[in-house]
Image (tube, rainbow, N blue to C red; front, side, top):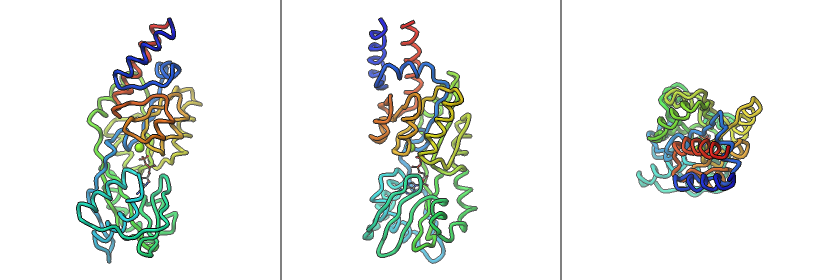
Length: 293
Ligand code: ADP
Ligand code: MG
């Protein structure tokens, strides 16, 4: 009867938009005691939009945005989409770009009209010796405390401006988090975004724990540490940056709206990219396992 129940469970999951790759995943879901979630694209819509451009002295908004767009047009990061869309809305033309490089969890760089340009988070620019980042500190902290993401544009080693980007929390996220907590699970958020932004989102959703500035490798280490402490960990994510952690978790859960790499690294795919799918899959796991025993 065992394989039969599992097959029925897998079929039932599929109809509910929960694609389960193997029977072991259902078993692990039943036993899950912690859910680790990524922020961008998992808790949030993953369709960030540009709210404002703050140029540094000597630069204009359009100049900063045009230079940033010239690099971001080559990036697949959700933040890049926001920059590209905003530049398009302002009818700004891309500048010629060479030597484009993306640094996961940091930002993008390249040569734009002969100048060395970096677009990314403060820490990464500082690591690269960029001057003038701290001039925006106060403003950045305030915006991040409201849940916004800020990224910086550096031209030839000097900060040219700051871009303010926001990404709405998915409508179903608060309900899903409440349900997961109700099921007795520990809900932990790990994000590459700043600690301030992590805190704003974490507090709003009343998560058990939240950590910002986490690199893809650190996401995976966090998951491993939780497992070592005895937790059965389900990890939900959507991005290339989540892939290592998804593979490390007892059960990897990919948002169907996410990247192929995330889906390939996971045991479960939530077709609609909706966290309520996790609660559904846990209920499913519990129902199937109960049937077997
Ligand atoms: P998350 O865990 O929130 O999905 P990532 O690990 O992908 O975040 O990125 C962490 C941070 O690195 C972002 O919040 C951003 O500040 C910066 N970053 C990464 N890629 C880019 C990019 N293409 N343009 C600008 N900033 C970027
Ligand atoms: Mg993400």
